[in-house]
Amino acid sequence: MEKLNPTKRDNFGSKLGVVAAAAGSAIGLGNIWKFPYITGVYGGGAFLFVYLGFILAIGLPIMLSEFVIGRKGGRNPFGAFKKLAPNTPWKYVGLMGVAAAFMILSFYGVIAGWSIEYVIKSLGNQFHEKSPAELNTLFSTFQESTITPVLFQLLFMVATGAIVMIGIKKGIEKFSKILMPVLVLIIIILDVKALSLDGAAEGLRFLFYPDFSKLTSEGVLSALGHAFFTLSLGMGTIITYGSYINKKNNLIHTAIQVTVADTVIALLAGIAIFPAVFAFGIEEASGPGLVFITLPNVFELMPGGYFFSILFFVLLTIAALTSSISILEVAVSYFSEELKIKRRNATILATVLISFLGILCSLSMGIMKDVTFFDLNFFDLLDWISANMLLPLGGMFIALFTGWYLGRKKIKDEILHGGYISKFFLNGFLFLVKILAPVAIAVVFLHGIGLISF
Ligand code: PFF
Image 1: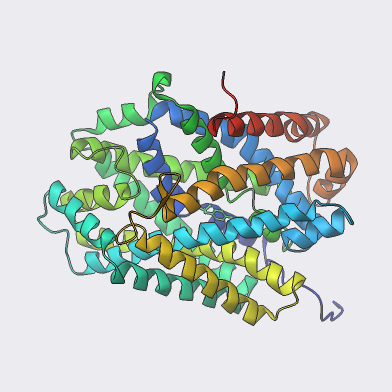
Image 2 (image 1 turned 90 degrees about the vertical axis):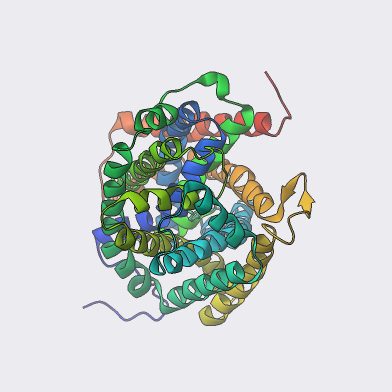
């Protein structure tokens, strides 16, 4: 019989639960909203090519590193570093992750709020018989308004806080397992429709044909930042989830499954969006509104489009929720385990603080548009600092920690609990985390911010 232990932490119930929850964290607005929008801004195929390279050579090994650190440390990121590397500054990597969590969730909640608004617009059949230009105006009028986007952002934050309060297993695991597959199905249906449109070939060419003359160093840095963002890496989310995984789980399989699922969904989203962008003459570099402007055009043309649009935005909101709970969890587990605040109060505190920052993000699209820092509004600033700075730097330290501090034997022991690792794979992994990933991140980062140039 299992001994009762009052300090025992909640665990994921099953193998599928782990993959589903980690995939639930990875798959979200990053895949369906952000990936198409930044691919549009940075010129298409070449950006995609670089992004996929980063996912494989940097994202995947760092995901495995986070799982190893998390399961071995058994704590929130700050606590895990403190336990695995006592009396060293490594714990501050965990703290940087908490800061990133605050920033990301602030603007993430705004976009999720837009998604809720689009559920309501869908229910009211508001896309019906509107031209592409009218759908564009529908979006920009809403986005620039003051009250409604803030209210929906707050609603989303309350939902996120409530799920985190219920606890890991019941809240997160149940949600993710059922709903993610339905979302994938809808995106595939959208793909089929998008591919039948007149502009399909041009859209696919934009997405897949790599024209490297369009690539800028900022684009490369954004591809790197997005590889971290989309896989939920660099800020300890996967460390936190790893701490809830039991020893029987095969960490390598889990890391590969999550990475592949996340990448496939981003590609499916791109295939749904770019053909439609070209078919309806939408500016591919429209920015954060791209998905909200493009997809209603597609729904308008589909039989049953009314229902599909409702279902799509409901599921997009839920995909956002399974990610946002994982972001909030980083802050909450830090507050409750390190600052010894009751979990419930920690959740309330983090949710309130983040919601406040989120209001500023939302207003920076409208009445606070002119308040800029380095030419970026508040929303873009938080997005830029977190995705393009904190996550890559966090990822670099996580790779260095795994490769140089934990080292071969400890990594191997942790992986061997529930899996097998060949010498070849282990050597390859060590090379990536000790050398390739840190050097590549440092070079891309310094080049992207203009400190070095070739
Ligand atoms: N990966 C999520 C997405 O693609 O929507 C966003 C995210 C979740 C980023 C968790 C970072 C994180 F720690």
